Length: 180
Image (cartoon, rainbow, N blue to C red; front, side, top):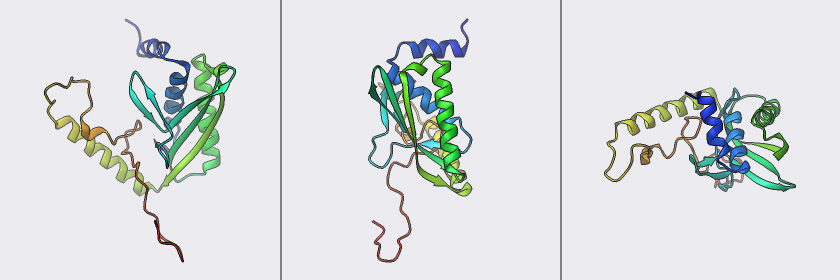
């Protein structure tokens, strides 16, 4: 029986290099300590369709010429030094591409941090995600849906398991600002 890793490799081989790079970049980024989620970004541009898993939020992959692709990540992080965190994300994405035989197709890796969360905000997001997951598990499967289809209640959960906040986050207004 093939291992989970071998099964993952088989699934990857059926996809285009663009989708494979998007998936591995997102997985590598979300595995970095202090990276808590991925977001589509302010204008929702960091998304890519993944035939095997729906939509990948927080990553876009664009052709960069010569059969190479640029990867752009939009992440949410815990309070941490962002420059070293971005460098670690980039290093892990490049290492993952190397392990998966895609290093020659990867050009640049750009890392954007959409938001930085305090430890209290991270705990709150984790609690919300676990509540959403529990609610999704308790929902009966509607007629006509297969068991592998996620119920609508789980649509706001990001690949990291945290609730996705695609809407703009309110921030305090400064002098002369309206906050909108």
